[in-house]
Amino acid sequence: MKKLLYTRPIIMLRTLIITFTTLTSFWWAKLWGKADRARTDHIIHHWAKSILTTVDVTLHVEGEKPNYIHRQPYMIMSNHASLYDIPIILASLPGSIRMIAKRELSHIPYFGTSLKHSEFIFIDRHNRIKAIEELKKARSKMLDGIVIWAAPEGTRTRNGELGPFKKGIFKLAQEIDAIIIPVMIIGSRQLLPAKTWDFHPSQDIHVRIGKPIYASSAHEPILIQNVRLAMMELL
View 1 (cartoon, rainbow, N blue to C red):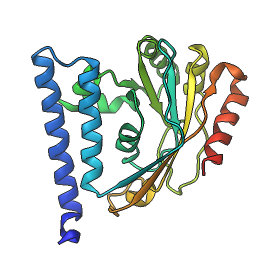
View 2: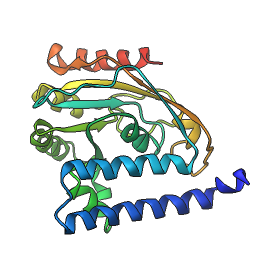
View 3: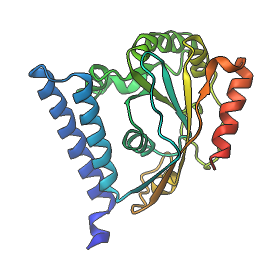
């Protein structure tokens, strides 16, 4: 019976239903003037936990969760091996976490508009200049309490190893004097490998949180190296 509950069609159907229901809940709250950031955070957190329940994930959060300082911009930087990294991060860490997403997602009807109104950040990955400009626009949101989650690799790894880091996110971090929280997600690749629909539910996922790194503490190449080393140490 349990195997039947976690077949690919069932997982995908439940995911669609949960996501559609969540988006509808957000728009109802917005219609009644109740979609403030706290309410949106609650809706996002509930979506993340529900999505992980559909694949029977057990989360193990290790390390000290960040205690955000008011008016100080924060960035969570983690590895990226699976689509499930998104709900894993949202369910594991506190704060008004929003992801940096590729601009193509903003064009999806209903879904893209909902993310925009929920203060998610979209960038054009095919145009470096535009991407940097869009990252700069995130500055005011971060100073107002939005915590940005980004995968410095820029895309999901296929072999489980950390790929090269993109420079754009580190440029933004230094420009706004951000505090970077390095995070490693262990086990999400086994749950759903990149570029596949090959689900392997009932996984134990470990989310390891590192010590904060101040973006102003080093020049860009050294900062990138320090963040990478911090993430590798979490392995």
